Image (cartoon, rainbow, N blue to C red; front, side, top):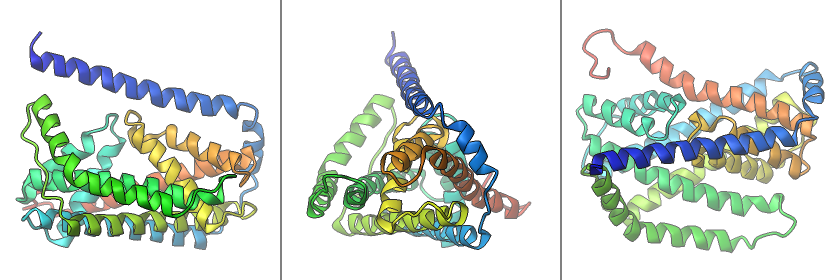
Length: 314
């Protein structure tokens, strides 16, 4: 068998494994809550949504997206390339639509194609997105550990996850480049990373942490606007939302973490005693609708506002 055929075979097995893992987690969550659906449906019929809080929560999420766009643009600039802020937002949000295609790499591919049509190096754009994704994930895990003390019966010393996060970022500076070169050699692509300077890591870390905090604040307001009887502290909202989001993101297979993130959200709300199982199901369903709307709407808006002639973005 050729090397290319071997790589394709390994890729197919990895994709099947990711889908199987995601389906297993989702099925386990559904089985755990098998007796709660009737209570959830009754509760859903009594909702009295406070739209002011829901709208404010959505505005905060869009602000968090803006922070990530600016951070990614700064990463691109660190490679020596440049993008206007408006085009950075367009590329970011339109490529984000690809998250809803099954598979883990469509978003990166869409981002590279859009950057190339804009006249920016596709390598610079995807390398910057890769760095931001890794740092965002590490920062999210550290945020979960720090704020998860609101949920844990055995609190973790605050300095420990911070130390682990700093160590992870420091290691990334030396570990990531050879790992990316190895991936490039295995896939037959010339991949490279920008120089992981202290400035670049600092900018991406600050942007990532701010976005996680904003997500948590938005989630707290959203829950207050839909199920006011569920009282989430700021710390608990940050930890629960970030942990469920990362569970879906790291599952790789399901598009946008559908099923996995939702099941994790239900489990965390229920296990932490923040909500009854019925309330947790309703929150999870409403949160999925909220998240999906906020993730898709900006990309669709940019596509709708795209000039019919002369646009360099397909």
